Image (tube, rainbow, N blue to C red; front, side, top):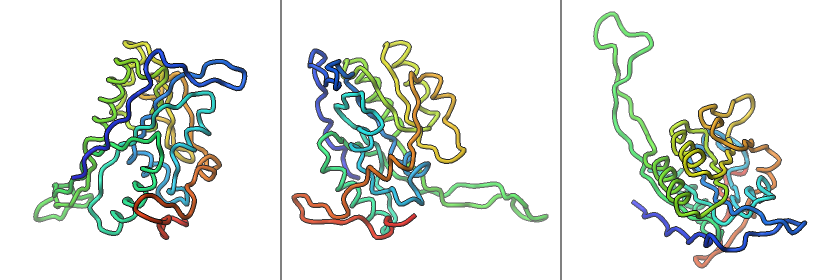
Amino acid sequence: MPQSKARKPSAAPHARAGLTARGAARPRTIVYVDGYNLYYRRLKGTPFRWLNLETLCSRLLPRNDVVRINYYTARIKDADRFSRQDVYLRALTTLPLVTITYGSYLSHAAPRLLANPPAQGSAYVEVILHEEKGSDVNLATHLVLDACQNAFDVAVVISNDSDLQEPLRVVKHDLGKTIGLISPVRGNDHTNPQLGQHADFVKRIRDGALQDSQFPEEMSDNGGTFRRPDKWKHG
């Protein structure tokens, strides 16, 4: 399993924050991205999957000094999807503010109750479940640790996962930090109220922001040139 990319050091608590156009200090901000939640709730099936997280954060948080973007994900096992994910993670590693932390991706058999069980025989059937594990725990751990170390003035979480309710509450109410929530929902879907109640501000990700935050079609790094996956060019 790939190891987590080393976390970049945070700006020292006394370091000068960025300045707004009027010279006012912008709050030091770390963004915590639940990669699977963002993908499956907001990006899957859209032409916006080739997403530059630095550009997106600068558009959504123009008054903040974003000092780091933590991206949490797991490597999938399906060969076709693995190759597309691999190219995207390669693109993310070109961004100086982004740190990638990996959880794990598990597949296992589990019994599930049939909607219309037969008159005779078992009412259950075994199905294969694919589950991403560890990203929410990694995100929560880093969020609380960074708050304790005064690594940020504002923490912004991109997720709609209710499992993050308690770490958000701790960071806001017990550690006195400002919390922003960027909800990766679409259409008429609602932001999770369990998360929203602990946020100082809540934003949604509009199509326009996604469209304007795409990587170039062709990119390069020390390994050579690579391109956006063909299947990601359309919704």
